[in-house]
Image 1 (cartoon, one colour):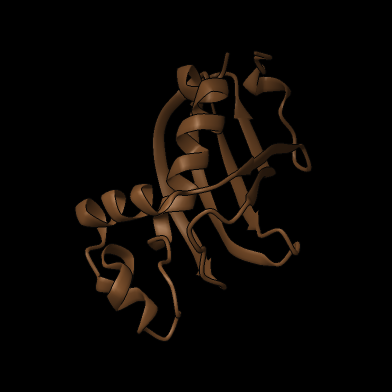
Image 2 (tube, one colour; image 1 turned 180 degrees about the horizontal axis):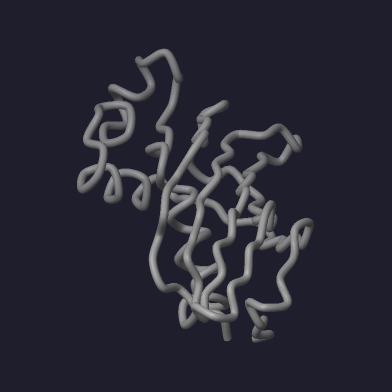
Length: 145
């Protein structure tokens, strides 16, 4: 797996993480712990909801991409999270739908004296029709390595 030097990341660098999907079981298990609403945890209730089917909890798709795609590249460099902004849930994510994820380095400020970088990551998730289903900005304090 390719590793990246934080000091070399500049605004505009894009990381495409391919496609992931969430099974019905994954959606229900995650939601039971994080967001136990019926349209996330109960198939019958979900089918009778405004969504007409089981949908993932808002943070689920980000969490899966973050854990399986982003952390393997950047975990050793994370000093602290500084904030999440403009998290937009634009379209529902249904069970077994293919979702693509990408993270863009929107801003990077490197401080060699303090040995850290502040990076604003802009995340975007799209469905199979290329419609944006979710987006967010997350600012991370990275060790400057």
